[in-house]
Image (cartoon, rainbow, N blue to C red; front, side, top):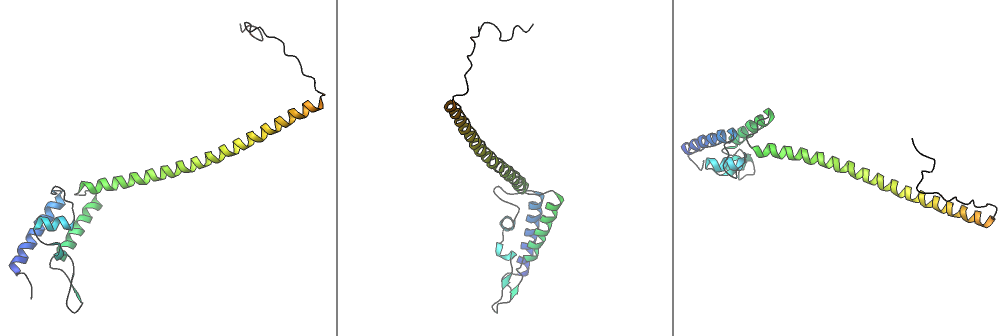
Amino acid sequence: MSRISDADKSRNENSIRAAMDRLLRGDLPPGGRCDLKTLAAEAGVTRTGFYPKRNRDGSSRPGPYQHLAEEFERRLQALVNAGTAPDPRTSQIDRLKTEVDTLKARVARRDTLVTELQQFRTLAISRLAAQHDEITQLREQLEQAGTVARLRTPKIDKRLAPFGTCS
């Protein structure tokens, strides 16, 4: 025994089909999306009619408008596959997801580069410190040995080029 009459069910199905056509054309209400919730609201029916029901014995039966929900999803998927999504937010979401993936890859590459440069900097600083220590040690050895004579540096007239003119 059905809760609604066949005439009411037929009228609801016609209303759902009309709302389905409007939504799939891209005629979305303000704040609405191209989904079952908006379809139900536009058709003036409850959303629960689009989903399967349970009998008292626990068995499952289809909802009164489940076939229309499946048709809506199938038509929506066909439009998406054809590249003409009725909801502009869907294409915007896809574009933003792609952009986020690109930016994540870029950040990962930059992080790798920063890590490599930090390792290089650490290595360079440690090598410079070792070379400085070696130079300091060699200078101390030269001073202790006393066998090396320092040369006097000639006074250079700063007004003249050290090797003559360039012309």
